[in-house]
Length: 195
Image 1 (cartoon, rainbow, N blue to C red):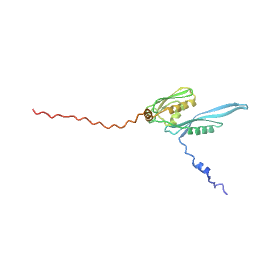
Image 2 (tube, rainbow, N blue to C red; image 1 turned 120 degrees about the horizontal axis):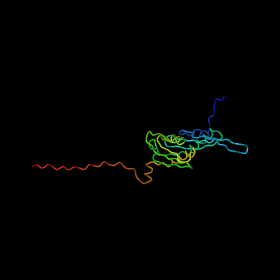
Image 3 (tube, helix red, strand yellow; image 1 turned 180 degrees about the horizontal axis):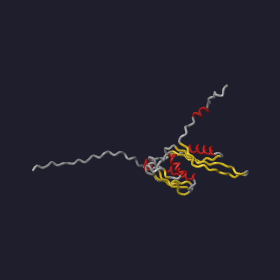
Image 4 (tube, rainbow, N blue to C red; image 1 turned 180 degrees about the vertical axis):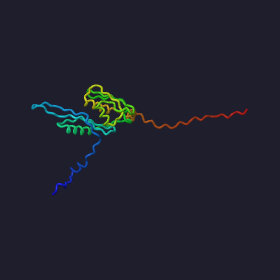
């Protein structure tokens, strides 16, 4: 029997292979660091990867993965990031309002920008904005410069963003209905008196 003929999977295995979802969004590695653990026999090397996954339409996920090889650490982080993606509102190509996100000792201040401004932000935060599909924004790091905490602080800021419609619903205000055009008042003209 030749090796070219492959057996088709049957039962649950076949269903599992068919049910694999198409991966959504683009993966970007923000930071890779080498870690060292001191054990009885010497030092044990490892790697930590910080990865962001985004679909470019207001949906992002961030995660850290640790493993003995770089590729394994990135794969772990990507899987975790895809499982914990968040969605937030975007107005045009910018964010709806000013916000400050905090995580640990890191704080990130963000403000909407006019069209054509571009992404004015630090390296880690910039990659998160690009993955989310934000093209015009002003951002400033306040506090810690740790790349992991900065990225997580940006994610916390994204969670605080609310659209105008959501705020109106919370406040109990209905969307303004289209007003009917007002009728113009009639001008009465008096007939001219004959002299």
